[in-house]
Length: 388
Image 1 (cartoon, rainbow, N blue to C red):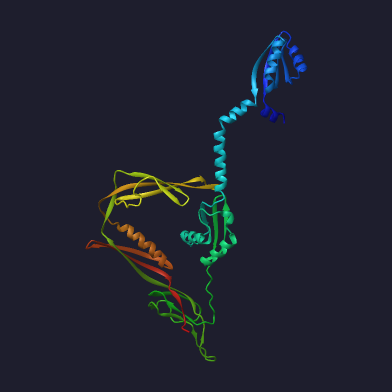
Image 2: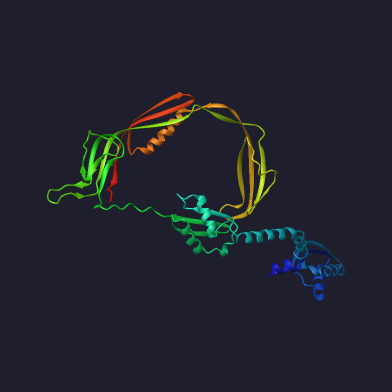
């Protein structure tokens, strides 16, 4: 309380020097001048503090008491008010910034999507915008239940979703719907056919009647295990054939590419230009922004105003760097790169073990042809449902 009173009313600290400085204390008491914090420095000097508005009376009483009053310090009062007046514009600016942050936090300026593993982010953002969640929306008016219902209708692949608002960021948390497992009835008729041509090395039949044996060559589409079981007592009956048929297969992949392609090299004279995005409006600091620039690579960087994870303001600085390029001449196509691409494709096709891989490359009429031959041991069993 005393500190608040000192800061509001102000106090003056004086050093009193004289033959009888205590005479001043008697005079102040007689005149009703309040004083406090009396400290005796020596026999002829003491210190005390009085309210700021009593400074003139104290100095007059000091002269009447044949003492000298020296002002040592000002505390609060007019000194703090003068300092506050000098810093008032700064305080108003800080208050305006805080008010702007508060108002900005009531609007969504950034939308994040979490949990979209197979769904495209662009599709989810478009669905959110149609459902009422987009940059610039007043989030207290957003009905999360209504947004959830609309999203589940617009995106059938979703099993559940919600929207969480953190300041000026809206986070859409998604849970994608799991694919239903294929339900097969054991009493439905189905055969096992060969997915590829090969030589059978192993036959493991779980149900059905095998039609091939190890060492036999089969063609693509040939029936390996029949779903029709014959019985002398009950006649023929249909089952769902299941089996694992390992076979040695041969695969061939081919890729054709121009032997020479034009390559580019960086040129001189790179240009940099800036733009400012305020909400959904864009202000370009350059002319002819919509004109296409041939012979330039454009690199765009965006700098968002805000603190990541805390808040975001509707201000984005866009930096566009235009780097010129020029055609440097033809470049030889790399056969090794084509071979690696074919190998990656081959690994996705084979359902088993690769035994050997050979590659051949040839060039004719300006074309580079790379052929990949592979021998594999894989499961060629494929279920074929019987026609109903």
